[in-house]
Image 1 (cartoon, rainbow, N blue to C red):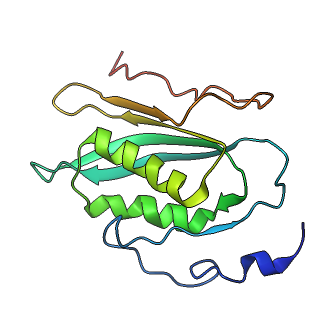
Image 2: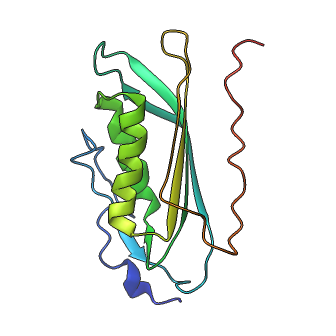
Length: 155
């Protein structure tokens, strides 16, 4: 599909866009899937994700991996980047951040399948990894491992 009209409603791509101050303020955008009817997986990797501890206000860091099998919609990547950046000012526990990101994407895209791996760096000496998946993997789709090594410290 080469019809450029599928991009005409995007408001953030191709121009200066201010960083949203919160995930609630962030605008996630979608475009029609030009390969609708073909099952394939899309992966987004955010190795420098940051949020704030809701109690102390200290920064938390994670490596996020978002995999999804689209149906009718694709997430526009600049809007996803701005959405993820909006968590820099957001106080929430690791579990809430990770699952909230997944649910927001599921609500927007209605994908055939989605999973997120939140590989969080230690807080209080304990790394916390958070995993969420919408259901079984669709038949016939190649889903590679996320390949993020468990936290090993200085070892």
